[in-house]
Length: 607
Image (cartoon, rainbow, N blue to C red; front, side, top):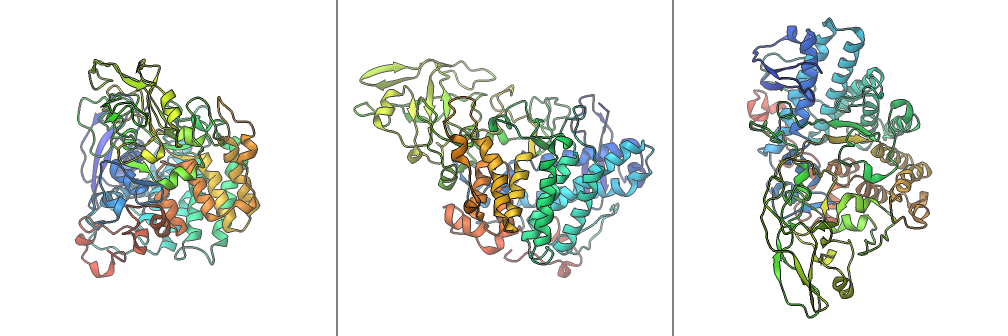
């Protein structure tokens, strides 16, 4: 691994912390000010500039603020028992919001850094092969960050040259121009980046497959956008379909493939698996993690990966262990203690009733799987294995000397730690007889509330050294499964419903697979035809395939369904959401208030 320096770049009112993303050697810190073109023309400068841009991603993917902005206030998620309410309710969302300011500031910090790389990097003395690859990464990343900004804010300043001095004037470029710049960068990156091979399989760097996946999604998003698209969008949807289909058809040559088992995609240790196209990288080394994970110093602010916490229910809360058992006395007690395996119960996000319904889940009986679609079971934790009596340690929070007992059939039942399930959330309603036959506590959908709900487990991290630690897992940002959904949506917009059904059926066939308890007829039962393909169906399929992967607000904003679906399915955001919420407010403190030509830089409507 190469050695990078921790470099602070000052320029254009932008502060950029350059750090290595996955290097594990000793970090060599050095402060530099007033860095200019000469820095980006050195091999170390070019490499470090790329690393800095990847590092900035950690302000987004894994942070509580950005995650909330991406999943809250949608049809899929309502607020759990704790956390910020603004994005959930749409009350108080304004231009002073810190999360919104972070998206703007960090996005432009990265872009200015990448502009310097692309403007001056061609003059470095690196080998032609390495130089082309690094510059292609910079093009990919600049397109990546501009796409993030244009989706959130609409018309945004478009700058492709390096800013080395403060500038107090700016204007907003039309979305059509911003999309043209993004497409140019990503098209070039998709041709110039290397392909994935067994040698370069770490996906914390961009490769051709990631560039193609992102390019297809950019075309798709542009096609929906009347302010950006070409004509009625047909050309953009055609480009989206063709680009996605190219990656799908030639996936072997690009070094990627679908996992056979949906449950393996987010399996711990498989973050660089064959389906994964691109990640925001993480590691366990405290010198390079920029995280509170296993660190001897404080984390870099807002760069912790807290995804392992946000969807965890309050499984340690006291509850009547004899709930629903006829004739059994009420007995409220702590059922579980907090531990590394089950996670820290932040309760920031919980599924809406729509989400449960979207999986078409018939639930899992206490003894046998009955649902065709395995994605529900592979997305949500449904079983908590008894972990009491317990002894406090780094991996267990509480010493609890008493064993867990319940009252069943008039008898006292003692649960065996590590063997018996203390809590079961089967995803369906249950009978009194089923409750009687189960040693632990069954919580049915009618009993879900802000504290008790199925934990979303895609980001779980059971290898943390302490039960309160954030995660060191790389965050999967792109995977091949979503490319099929991009192709399906584009085909739908082109009125090619048969192709859309074919793309969806690949994922639904995979979803029917179970490692055990395979239901007879599952594959056949999961197939759809062109008659099933509607926008609502595609959005529901995205819920089933992509729940919790931080795409939902963008999916609904893209398809023009955000307001209607929040009103229909979100009891917290529905009463307050308005049409202007499809864009975020331009930050005032870090942008509008600093401009000397403020009258030439309008705020987004409604703010």
